[in-house]
Length: 38
Image (cartoon, rainbow, N blue to C red; front, side, top):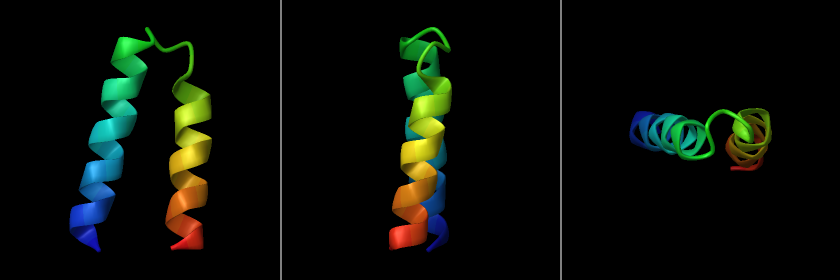
């Protein structure tokens, strides 16, 4: 479980950096919803 959480956080951070923080909120919402559905 913690492994998946760390992966989600890394993907979120990487997505924020790549998109220059423009899609940061979208990535956060998608990752949060994925965590809740799993």
